[in-house]
Length: 358
Image (cartoon, rainbow, N blue to C red; front, side, top):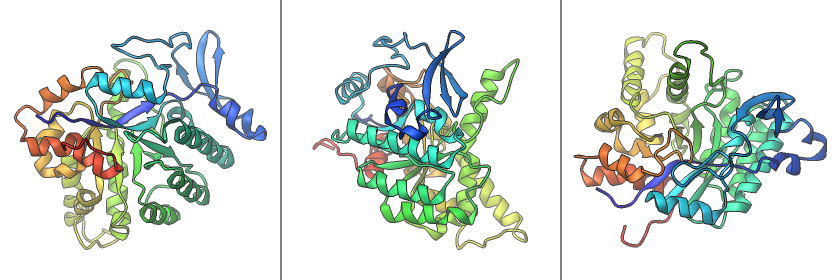
């Protein structure tokens, strides 16, 4: 069992007043902000409630389960990693995750991303064991490209796009400059489950379970868009990842794409040089916390596609028992395979340093 773990999916909590302080004055009133409404702590953007949040008073949490509003600075993050037996992490947003991609004003969305990216780079840029993932706007393609360039210049390691883009799907030709820029800059693109669509469409009996399943399975659609439309074939240097969505569905999705490509060949456009699954195995990845099905199917998906993540500090994550969870899941898995999934893939993808012994 490998002694080293890198979490490819963690979250940082931004200061609740980040955008009220950081946005240009003309955008500030409509930007993300946290307010108390009828006794509930709410995240607002463009005067709409984007998300109801835990009370601000729940700031301290506990060592066993940190609260949503846990203090976030490099020293605290490294202490949490060490407590959990994790060497390094890939860092996604927390508050921005819930509001950025529901913003309708393209200029406000772009400015919201810029404020977050600069804060992240200023706060954690000097910490070599943290790979920050920047936010890029999705409503204005030139702004998306400009922010990719800014993210690279600020030293962030990857960029986040919404898992779904229903107004302009990811097979639309308008996205071509984004794929070109990300490939040229060497920036992996992440599509995090729960972004771009309503996270809680179900109501009533069983809704909590239904919503979770719908949310974490959503990125399989995005994967199919990128593979079948020829995006990955045209841009072989582009790396794309489906994040916090598990891996158990991946083997079936790859097989289903190939089956559709063969059996419906008369309608397939474009014609690809290889089957659709080839391109994801070459350029794609998924992250998971607990997924014995995904681990068992690694021979069908390819080990290079699988990255483990703790999802710290979310309640469905594995902190503070990540090593225990990993040991249980990887019992009987050869060390070389476990190492690739648990730390080598992430280290290579994000340029994270490894201890000398590894």
